Amino acid sequence: MAAYDERRHARQPIAPAKQKNADVYGTTERCPWSDQVSRQLSLPERAGFRVLHALVDSLYVQRQGAVRDDYARLTREIEQHTGLPMALEAVYRYVVFLPSKQSPEVPVPNRFFCVPESGEPKVRGLECRRHDTPPIVVRMQTEVLKILSEARDYESYCAKLEDAR
Image 1: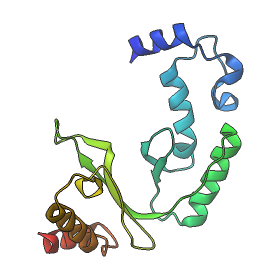
Image 2: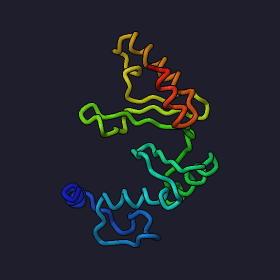
Image 3: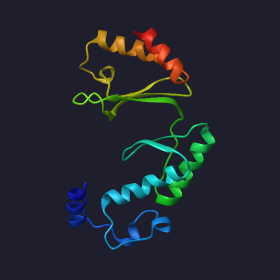
Image 4: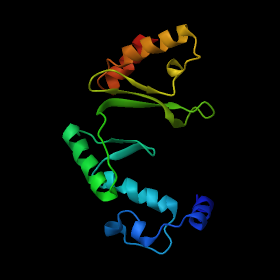
């Protein structure tokens, strides 16, 4: 990470006026990119949320007992701090980040499914979304996701996982 920070700083330094959450962390002449990202992720963490995943266009956070209003409040706070427009797409019952094909013990952010309050699963990176996937595989994955989407918590998810087998 240090080598990346050096290369990035040489090409595109982050000026003190552009450093995130300066009110909390202050500013420095040299702010590495990784520090900038950490500063941005600290806002949800300071509010008691756990950051599950963050990309350029999405942020998945979790806090025990949080309700939609809590997530909406966090969205507004991040918007105020960053000056970037944000929208609360959904509150999910659960999110499953699937394992890497190269390292099964490591989950990856581009292969996941999650179930919002409405119950209709959101799917990214699975075969059932590809146009070249055989119809039987699409049908199988779709049926499994339908069964899993009935779960409300970890215990019922494990039970539904058994049903889906």
